[in-house]
Figure 1: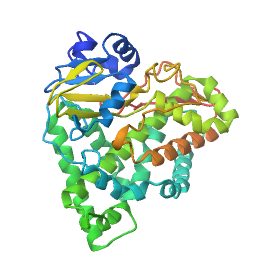
Figure 2: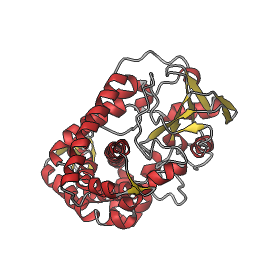
Figure 3: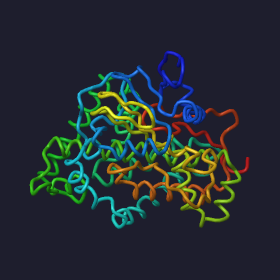
Length: 397
């Protein structure tokens, strides 16, 4: 983790790369909700706002008149906007850009991917075998979404390490190092350009070929639009779900009562997955203020950045009773883990399927497991939060 100047006051100098925030942000958010529900910091160019209440996050997410999605990461130094539609699109461009992708992520389309996902989970578990210990992040959770997305896009599985490196550089290093961010985006663009050219010469049954045939306003996608969408699918489809799977397993490793209850009663799985999504929501997005406005009693000034924290919204006790408790049978759970408004994650069906299958298969193979004695879990920095190391002891030992 890079060295950071100490935070003087979370309300006026917050830093989501601060080690305290990275390791355990929840007490910080609780303090801000009661003391300063919209915090501000000048650590980021043009200043950055952090709303911590559900209603404020929701209001901003739905307000495209005052808040633009063209910048989806809060950065210390802004870089030229690099379109990755539809996530970086505002109205009226957003709807047609999103509509192009919807057929690939319907419940029916995702259902066809479940057998393959279950098979690859079992393959990863077979590789762990009868070991008494493993790293569930390095040996299991991080591989599942990579291999699912690789299959959807028709990319080589052997490039998995490259994809994970790109994601680390874009989401963890890039927000504080613009040169790394731009270099990585250029590498991704060149990579996908080669695969697009290959599909143009020889179409296949994959998502790249599908997008080459797609039309917006009766016209093919422009090369920048196509390449930006492919970058988005790769980034958004891997780290988010990998983090959610890892956080779910971390919870079950550290809360044996929930683990045993879920093993004994698999019918709780749907509710448990939704609660893991709420309590450990991995994704924080961003907005840029394009027109001065007031939200939650705070004035948002033009050009300011906004850390739009769906994880913080999910921990708001005004919206969720016992918000800081993980209740795997929570009945009412209108969480915002997949975002709110027009940019709600179009891959939510895929993420839910991957999480469910991953946890089901893990529990079927390892109904007893725990965090290794003295182990320290490493949580990722930046836009996506999830465990990067999960040293587990397997079995009752």
